[in-house]
Length: 347
Image (cartoon, rainbow, N blue to C red; front, side, top):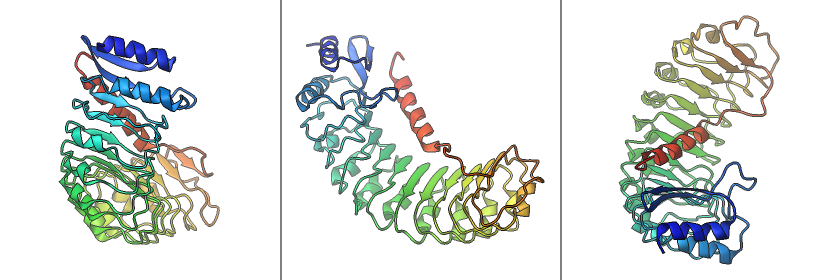
């Protein structure tokens, strides 16, 4: 069968429209994930037999560069994509696979790999051999120890290790000098690792829902940091050096134990969004009045009610906890996927 025949066969089994893209007679992209679908995974509720046949057909598309199978619950299905050696984008997240498929070690062109929500307990050595990887997502698994060989992934720019069973941030993260986005959350870590402060390229940091009480003075070494989500820790004081982080645009400190801000906090001239909700402020920090570019401020659920009438320089002041908040990382992931699709020749 040629690629056109294979896609027609897949369509006859799926029976629901799905995204695919051809370049001449070669299928170069398929997505069986649709955010507008009620279940999002288009074949999530197909039988295991149907899933096996669909995946076997996909494995014959030798020129595939983009494959998104997110949220299709393919855990009991045996499949092998080892011949899809042109793949650059592979999303297998939310499929409860249990282990990292061995065939991934053959996909040396991979730049994007998402294995989140798969009940993984370890990171196999062959992951560290994917030296073209730039985006790696291992969030919401059961990983206790990350293979230190992953320090070989020198091209990594985006790394998500949120909600695993590891008791410490793996030290290899501190060696990833090209890292721009790092996500860590839901852990028992009590000290912010100083080796993270050496990540001079870091622009977006999430270190949330842990037990951090202080940030080291070296935190200010992250001079390229644009956004930091440090919510739901136990931070009592911010280091004075934080005022030197002149590229900081967003800072989320919701759910900590802050009572005051550093004296020169108003020197953060690029700060546009600041969340101080659910802390221990008894009065509005005077530094806020002098933050020239601050547009959004969260003050909800502090120890006492206070007037914010003098904060006329701020467009939006949140006095009650909002039900929804901006998800920077989700927006960035959507942009990454779009970028991969745009790069495909002819598109």
